[in-house]
Image 1: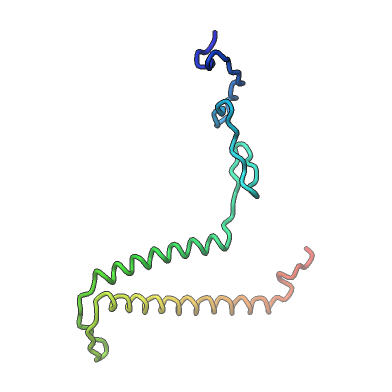
Image 2 (image 1 turned 180 degrees about the horizontal axis):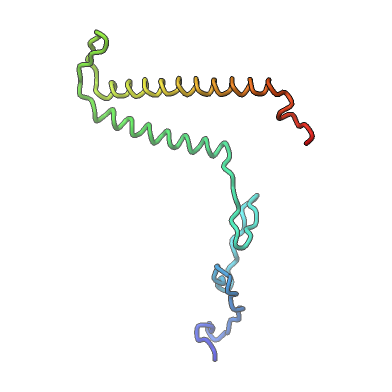
Length: 143
C-alpha cells in the first residue's frame, strides 16, 4: 500500500507519521522551521509562556487609548458647534455646546480625583497608625 501523494516526480519521500499529540503538521520537504527571536524562550509543548506586562507596554497601551479618546473628543467638538446660553450662579455666558459639556466633564473628573485622593490619604494615615501601634509587624521577625 503506497500513498500516491508520497511520490514527487518519481522520488518517494519518507516522513515519520505524526504522533497523536502533535498539533503542528509536518513541514514540507526542504523547509526550515522558523527561528526563535533573540531573547525569546523556547516554547514547551502543551504550555504557554506566562508573560507579565512591563511598565513600558502599559504606558504604550495607555497612550494608544488616550489617542483614541482624543480623536473621539475632536470629532465631538467639531460636530457640536451650536452656541448655547448658560446661566450659573447669576453668571450668563454664551458658548459652544461642546465646550460647555467638556468643561462639565473636566469639573466632574476633578471632583472624582479630589474624592479619591482624600480616601487614599485616609487609608495611608490609618496604615501608618497601625504600623506604629505594632512596631514588630512586617519587619522580618523570625516566626
